[in-house]
Length: 68
Image (cartoon, rainbow, N blue to C red; front, top):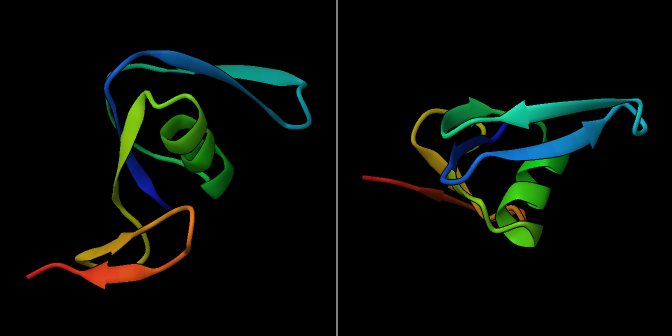
């Protein structure tokens, strides 16, 4: 699951819109959908890492990059 760094508090609907959750500033382990919405659409967060240790992923393309 991706880890995002939230810069600005935001709310998002999950579970087919049946539940609304709020994310405060800080790092959160989230689903792919939440990561895409926060990073690409709302632009209130940045992607920290996804997948295995030291892997950074581009949510839009799904490409991974290893950090040294």
